[in-house]
Image (cartoon, rainbow, N blue to C red; front, side, top):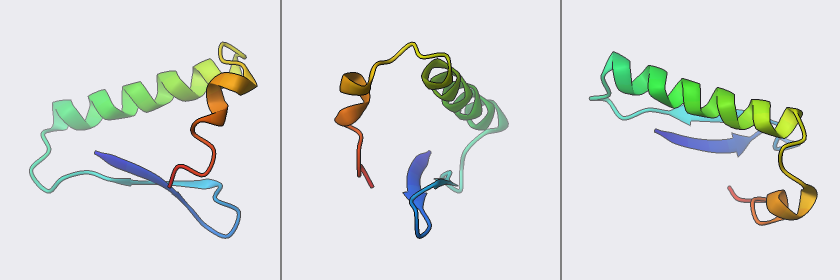
Length: 57
């Protein structure tokens, strides 16, 4: 699954799964994304960890 940030402020995540993705793979991707967002929201990563992803699209 590909995830890129889009929109004028780059504040939208566009998910593009492959056409042959299984339901299990799709939900695993959602789970991973949810875990990553929860870690950022909980402050488990500092700004230095996140800097390498700035403008990653």
